[in-house]
Amino acid sequence: QVQVAESGGGSVQAGGSLRLSCRMSGYADRTGCMAWFRQAPGQGREYVGFIDSNGIYTYYSDSVKGRFTISRDTPFKMEMFLQMSELNTEDTGVYFCAARRKGKWCTKNSDDYVSWGQGTQVTVPS
Image (cartoon, rainbow, N blue to C red; front, side, top):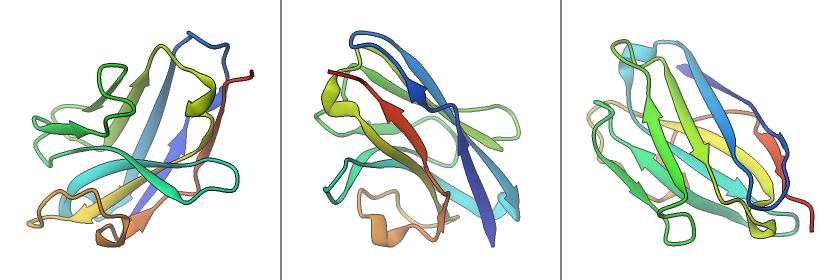
């Protein structure tokens, strides 16, 4: 089983930027797609975006497209990043990274991901 752990959360003013990291450990070579999800207070878990196993193909939700960028480190791809810019109050929430087993399609469905981190809090005060 792959373990993942997020870091980099914090409080940032509206319009600012923040970079989250997700580090893998364990059988990381068995990791395929990776994704970011977030959960606002009192809300369900929301898909943010995913990146394929090669770190080439990304796909974002409409709410973050053009503002957020997902990447993976090369060449070992043991870490995933979420660069967030133009943050607004609606981006507040706990951000989770998730990993899917290699050989599976990348999806927006949280049920398809088997490894989850504990989450990191991002707060954009009003």
